[in-house]
Amino acid sequence: EDNLVSIIPPYQLYYEGKAVKHIRVHKCIARHVREALAEVLEHYGIDEIRRLGLDQFGGCYNCRPTATGKSLSLHAWGVALDFAPGSNAYGMKAPRASLSHRDCETWWQIWERHGAVSLGRERNYDWVHLQFARLE
Image (cartoon, rainbow, N blue to C red; front, side):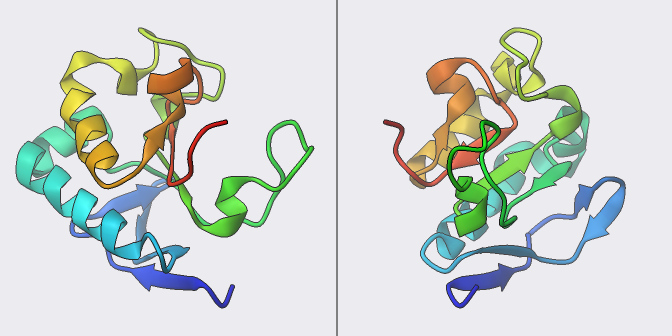
C-alpha cells in the first residue's frame, strides 16, 4: 500500500451507484490515469460519457487473487481498472460487451496512448478491464 496514491477523477464516477471521491492507483500510473480520464472527458463530454457508461467504475486497487486464484490480480498492485461493469461482464465477448462497440474506439485509443492494455481488445474477454502491464 506504500506505492498507492489517490487521484480525483476529472468527472464524476460511480461505483455501485455511489459517487467515487477518489481512485487509489499505483503511483507509477497515477499521472497516466488522470490524463487519460481528462482526455476522455474532453473527447466525449459528460453526456456521452454517461450514455456509454464510462462513468460507471468497477474499481482499481483490490488486494485479491485472479479469477483462477493462481496468483494475485493486477488489481492487487493498483495497476488495473474496471469500467462499465454492468454491460461488460468477465466472460462477455464482442459484440455483446458495450466497450467493444465502435463508439468506444476512442476510449481505448486514449488509454492505449497512456500505456494501458485492454483484455477485451487483445483477447476478446473481460472488456471491463484495462491494465498497465503487458500481456504474456
